[in-house]
Image (cartoon, rainbow, N blue to C red; front, side, top):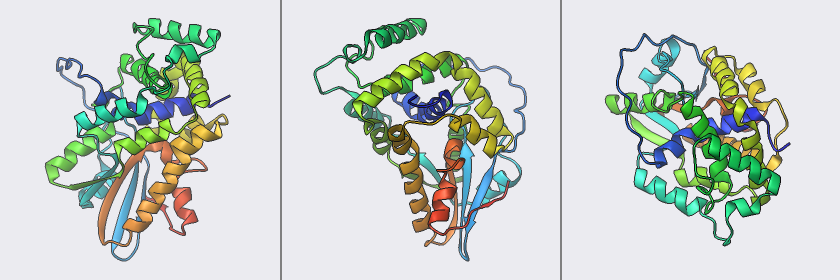
Length: 304
């Protein structure tokens, strides 16, 4: 098995904001009177020394409805911070679209569907038809791009939206307060993580995505429920229940978490208070950012 349904969905969540930001804008929904957002208690961690505090907040990039997470200790931590750090800064839409085309376009002269086995191609084409998409839509592209897009589109049709996601709200808060902003990665480096996966693994990865699309919404619902309750171990189990392909896991999780831990270690040399927000899947399990920090002899404490 290349990876579990859970890991695939977690990867889709992580890529959702990046991918939807690069696509053509969809018509805005007609505003309606909304009920008060339910209050939740997601997990929050802290790294600190004599003159530096860095908060680590695990986010969900997309939600089916707004959630009242900015309260209690999270609100206090955010209010005390002068810098918001997210995974990537995706404000430059034109640059993001160029990056997707540069990284995702095939250069081997082959069409995507021609690289599939007949059985995998039949499954893929059925999934495309099921979503109302042309079967040839991704033919000029590498397999990782539809492997990300298809779960994204499935979640979007189930009502998930980056507008309800935590990052969108955090960026709005930061702009309103005049907070400085930074990013752990560039959009190009995020796409490089997918593009670094060997082509044959990308094809197998896409086939598993297609096979497991019917489960995507229910699996992500379980992830969101665990995140809302701050159940980090449960969230990690949901995501990491099955063994992943080492190439995929290293590219999309382990190396990135290690890089982010090194970023935090370097940032601890500067005084101040920083609020770091990354996908919740990066803050649980054996390869988490906290585990990587421990290997650098940096103590992390959970505050919520």
